[in-house]
Amino acid sequence: MERERKEIIGRGTTLRGVFRIVEKVAPTDSTVLVTGESGTGKELIVRCLHEASPRAGKPFVAVNCGAIPRDLLESELFGYEKGAFTGAVTARAGRFELAQGGTIFLDEIGEMDPALQVKLLRVLQEKEVEHVGGSGPHSVDVRVVAATNRDLEAEVEAGRFREDLFYRLNVIPIQLPALRERRGDVPLLAQAFLRRFCQLRGRGEMRLAPEARAVLEAYPWPGNVRELENCMERVSILAEGDSLEAGDLPAKIRKAAAGTLGCASAGGLEAEDSAGSSAGSGAATGPADAFRWPELADLERLGMGLRDFLAACEDRLVEEALASSQNQHAVAARLLGVKRTTLIEKLRRKGRMD
Image (tube, rainbow, N blue to C red; front, side, top):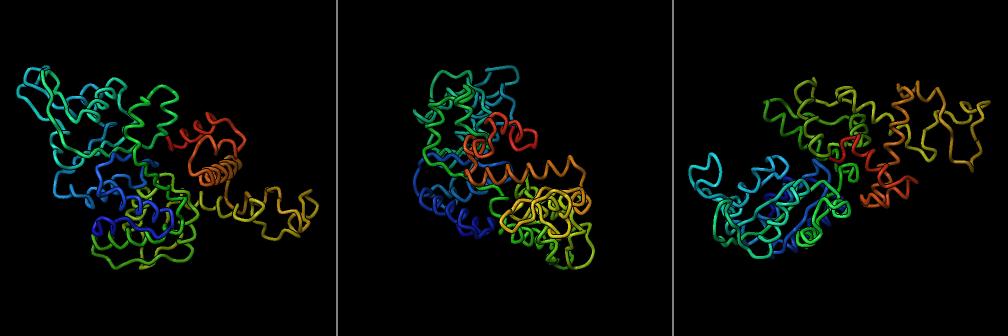
């Protein structure tokens, strides 16, 4: 486990809690469901789980259920017999059989067609698969770990995911935190990625300048660790010198971070000089009143238009609500005073949900 764990960088209490669960469940054969946004490192955690288990010397087979066409996924998972369909010139074992004795990782399980969910449920219950076009079962001994970036409980409520399969998969749930929920880990990850990419390109190691560190911590990272990794690869190529400055970061990141940094104080927006700037503007200035309405000068200072400014404020409030509710959409929606469907639609527009 130590070898895999070294690749998962972080020192926050949330991530330590994930590792504690992994250490407890690894020696067992219990089914595990890993949830979290895209790019949070779900497969890395699953591989860590496999490497720490008694099955470590056996195969680890990963299947992306969302990347394989639905009409082919059944034969990929369970195998097929010769002549089962056009092109099946020989019999072929499925992924479950290829993982015999080891672990099968069903990524993006929420994308699976309901008809196939029934067959998967039977495999979990009976520990056997039946080839497409076959006439008899084949016993399999595998540990099943599934992952998804969807809210499967909501999918069950909507009738898109079988309730019995959900409970069969959700024996041991592991929720991976989004990167914005572990901001203190962002500089650690950024520096590690920078070091790796600089080594790959044979250039000297780059260090994070304080201003760049502040921008990286302020940005919400909707693409999570994957987005941060891609960003560090880009700057390792384009940036000059041995220090990564804030100006070396993509404009999109600087702009979004400016909105967050500008909304960092209790009032939602930081005043450069609240006593002077609010005079005659109608804004509250008393020390007991923490809120200050934004002004046109704030837009100019942040270099943002009205649309971007409002979007940044909305993003910050949504992120805070999700963090406070531990990513429970219904609770976050109540905190924001909107309908759950409204919140989910906002997240979809931002690419946070499929």
